[in-house]
Length: 552
Image (cartoon, rainbow, N blue to C red):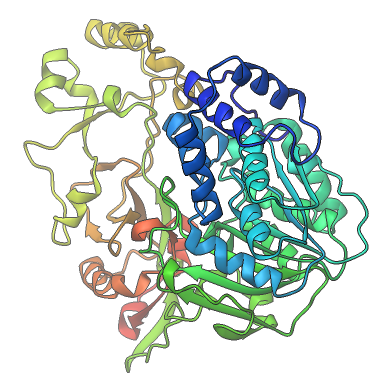
């Protein structure tokens, strides 16, 4: 199993299970799993749902709503939903995806991460005779799916409470369509056996060396490629990050060689795709074994404008461009690929040709290592502190040059070889950092602090003459740093590759061109855009020839 589901079930969840039971979940969709049986036993011990709730739920399900799924989301904490990757899909996305899938005439439809059954139920409403397989690792979710399909009186339904990556589908004579929204789970919640599975499957499919920093949606793509046969097809909604990030290299390779991407539909970064996750949505349509010479790629202004979904919508982009482009988001129709006229006397260069880019300092505990000047003085730590930039707004409001001021916060910057016993004030503060407080672990036991020796010595990169923000809902901002202040991990250091550069002129030029950099970072829901050092270094800018002539 790639992720672990919460073991305990709350009273509110049992009430949802009781409603599912009363709607017919137990006797529908095949045998229950042991985990489902336990929940059913607990639900059977509580009072039956009132008739009004049952009738309302039935009416809503028939009308295309998901009352049980909404109740389940409400019964769980935000953390529980996040840990389970439970991000249920809006109806405005489910319907066009299912219609596209059914338009290709599948004999069987598989919903590999069914959640509360929104995709499966839509298939049952629109094509009641199509064979259905709904799979989910969450036993309460599969019980809810059983109930929804029972109310709709769906035929030829199998509901399985298991991990999709470990599933084996029975042989089937016709074509199988895969549709759904894989759980939104980050790599750090995927266990070692799950990561080992991904490495092995990717290698078996001809994509060796895959990064285990991939989120669970990558696992679903590879699991589908492993299970499907040539001619099968599918349509998945995922976060769009795999278009550009490092681990996405293997997903992109799979799309071109095996899974057979036919169209990509990128939902506008400003649109709200998922209620609980800040991530831009992407719908990927594919046909196993296909190698189209052109792949449709479009940007959709809002989820309401997605329908109809089809391989003929958007710009047809030559396959070769996908093969040769590291970041696929720039290939989308709608403006990410901007044609610019190069001004006379200018040269187009990548930012990394002018600067070495390094991220800011990660302390691991800002509340401990960062303090006001008055607090540092009161603690007797002032001589071991240095001015530090702690927020992106400080750079945004600096007007191109940021300076030390009396209210500037300070960073405790003890060198690695510092003798902790040489100062009573420092020793007292370090001992406080090594002591648990308020039920929380000691600062010294936090992840980043534990990974360095000694735990209290934060990294001390060379001070950079230029700095830049890296994440905001606006273009990056560049500033001169004449006082050589330290910078927390809210921005990046820029180190010029030539001592002859006119840095003041460069800052003005970079800020003027910053709006053109939008779309080349990692963009999340709501327009939040993040630039990793490599992504920032890869951005092309135009620079006056005379400024470049002095390069060493």
